[in-house]
Length: 359
Image 1 (cartoon, rainbow, N blue to C red):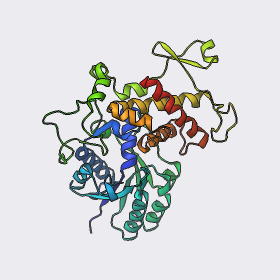
Image 2: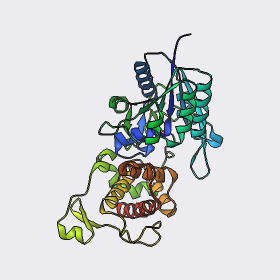
Image 3: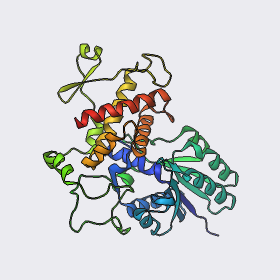
Image 4: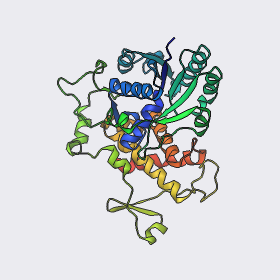
C-alpha cells in the first residue's frame, strides 16, 4: 500500500497568524483570502516535505451559521478537491466550541488506524499535546507546520506542542503573502461585485463580513473622511509613537503624530490582583500598540453603524475583537497565556483608544 501524508489545518490559528503577518494584528476581518490558492500552497508544502502524496486536507473551523452549519465561504472551501470540512460551532457568547476536540479525536483515531504515515498539523494550540502523543503511540509521525511571523520565526506556537511533535516546519512566507491580503475599504455597493455566495475559484472574504448597506444618516456622518485615502492596517499597526524628551516620559505622556496623548495609569483599582506600579513601561507600550493595531484594522471596514453599536455595548467587547487583542498581546509578550492583570489593562485601554480615535 502506498504511503500518504495528511494535512490537519486549525483554521483559527492559520488565519490569525496569517493576518498578523499581513496586517500586524490577528483580527481575521482585516484580511481577505484566496482559499483555493492557500490550500494548494499548503498541500504542496506537505507533499514536498514528506515526499509522499497527500491523502486529504482536514479543515477545522467553527460553522458560522446557526447550529454550526457552514457559511457560503466555508461551503466553497468544502467543495475544493481533497478537502474535508470539519466544523465546530460558535457559542451564544461568540466563543469557538468543539474545534480542538475534533482535531484531537481525529488525530487519535487516524493514528490508531494508521490511515497515513505522516500528519502535518497547522496549529499552535497547547491543548493538542495529548492528542499528538496518542497518534505517535500508534506509529504516526506528527509534524507541526507553522506560519512565519514578520521575522520568519514560527508565530504563536506552544513550546509544549513543539516538544511533543516530531518536527517543526516553518512555511515559506510567500505561502501567506501571495494568498492573504489586507482588506481594503470598498464602496458599500459595487455593481457586478462578487456576492457572498462566490464560488471557490475566486477570492472569498473571511466569514463574518458586516451587512451591506448604510443608513443615510450614517453616510452623512462619515462624510469627507470616507473619501480620504486611508493607510492600511499594516502601516497603522506597525507604527510606534515617536519618543518624547525625558521630561515628557517622566510625566506619563507619549507623543504621536505631532500631538501628545496620556498613558493610562497601571495603578487603577481592580486590575486583576497585581499591586500598584507593578506593570512595566514596556508592557504598557505593548498594550497601547495592540489596541491601536486592532482598532485600526477593524476601522478599515467598520461603518458608522458598526462604530455606534460598539460604543453602545461598552464595556462588552465583541468576541472577535477581544480574541484579537489577547492573541496579539500574547504574541508580543512571547507568552502563551496573558495574566488577568494585563487582560484588565488591555480591555480598559481598548475603550480609551477607541474613544480617542472616534472623537
